[in-house]
Length: 358
Image 1 (cartoon, rainbow, N blue to C red):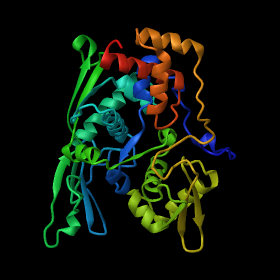
Image 2 (cartoon, rainbow, N blue to C red):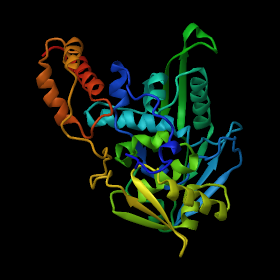
Image 3 (spheres, rainbow, N blue to C red):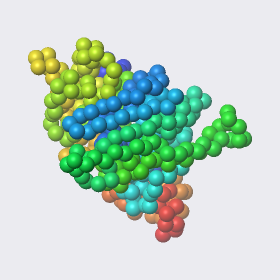
């Protein structure tokens, strides 16, 4: 959890859905996952204003060219859609289910998962995000389909061009442009799907979606990728600015980092700034384990369920011994869910849907 320092909680957005609905809990409690390549390199715009200029980024032999559509480059907020998709696909893989590049889902479940509102403007923002993700073309020598990188090919180089999302379909009620969205379906690029299949992913803290500013999200991603489970990681300010992809002078970025260090509200990592040497130091708060998972500080491993939860479990998994299911659920968990009662109900429901009666 974020430390209780003065004003630190004011720097985070409120948790809009602290008690998810019972019947979407299996979605809400999926472990948050992101792709390593997009955490390491600046694929997404940090500005909410449309950015339509072509951008190029180079670092140690890797290069990335981003070609936006007329609606602008995909933003770090649009990335929420792909984080959701990656998380759901990884969750299915971990349960031994078959997956492919196409994913159908309820936009409401996505909005809850990424801590957004569920009003009309939020659904409109979701559709606009789909358009930018589909319109942005990525041209890069960063590969995901094999263990050898393009920079290791000697005098050869492999260049890929792809859209982040290749296709999308949105079904609305009444068949009208302004009708309520019933479901959406997207097909992610082969580049992204290869990253998922090769487990090129890292777990993110749930409070990632509560960070207010795009630059804060980007700095957290870099800290998560490069500090990981190490006690600490030091990076030069100028190098960090380059990795963020932010379009701001170094002087302004120095102020941003000082502000981050003062409020110290990033999840998983504390931020400090060394004036002498112009270095930024990320210190692991102890919430990221050596295995790379994120846990909640102060959580007791003895999760207690409300008595009414067992009755609800019997309703969604008729015929099953709910106490046997509880033992299976506790063994299956990789990290404490935000809402244990809802998570257990979702687990029982999925067992019944997959296996039927005992």
